[in-house]
Amino acid sequence: MYQWQTLWSLSGPELPDEAISVAQNIHIRPRNASEAATHSSSPLSPTVSVPGGLYVVNHPPRDEVHGSHRLQVDVKAKTEDEAISEAEKTCERLTASLSLAVSGTPYFFELLRIRRVDQKEEYSGWSQAVRFSQLVAPTPLKDSKLKLSLDIAWSIENNETANNAFLHLSTAWQLQATSGSKPLQRSILQHYVLCIEAIVNGAMGQVRKGKKEEIRIAEQKYSNEFAENLGNRVDKAKAIREASTALREISLVNMIPSLDAICPMLGIPSNICASAKDLYRFRSRNLSHPGKKQDAEMKKWLNSGPKTFEHCLADTVARAFLLSYCQRLSR
Image (cartoon, rainbow, N blue to C red; front, side):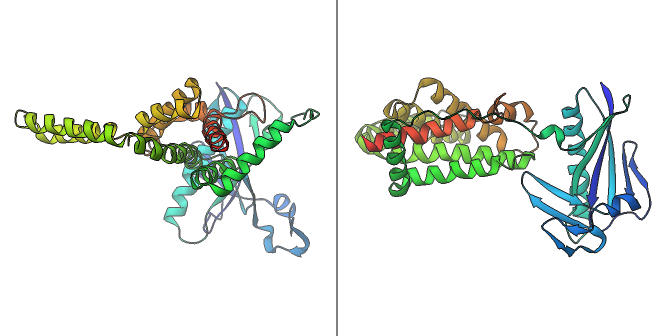
């Protein structure tokens, strides 16, 4: 573990007029004269003067904050990335708390610099986030791939299920371009799951229609057995809840049995089907409970791996469902 100092630009409707220590590792001070002189005009229009040089430029995935104050957060961490992550969590909690306590415009913060206490070097806040990816020369586009893309485009435009799934998938892509905070990560995963659900629900309509009589007979049999045995159950409320779940499974309403039914029909590989079940369970058990510790699972589903443009696991699963569904429509 090393000791790290991080410096952030801070803005908000109410801030101290002199340096203060919020906690042992959190310090706020007004920016000095040299810092104030750095920016006097808007970067969007150099001819427009910004009084006091105070402004926020919103361009995802971050806000460029030219604030009146500086916030120093000291943390202990093994690496620079871990230090920034821990300090950012502290900043999020502090600014959220201030925004709740103080009415007016929101509080904004941006990382300016970071340094390890036992070293002289310091680094600009966002230099470590820049990624360089060399693009490969394209190979000729095959006619079969072009035809497939046109079929997919037709399906998205003309089929309600494909269109709904695509809207959720494209929303996840847009959100992922601005990914950072945990609430945003939850939204990204929700839309990936909703993409899968849209395909499952759309495809299951045909499955249920084909198995209508089979489902009716199974439901009637279960209902008769339940009615005969209910009188012997001590905890009748629990028995009714169990019966409700069982009937949903029989009628192919629940997501897990629905996945088992449509994956073979759509030709979705078993490993993708298994991942879809895991993602759905994670959404059901965790994403509705924001207080739960989810870092490891979030990384499992959202980390793209060592390559900049590599698809994350949730993306891979969701696009496989949409692709398979569109291919089935075009057959």
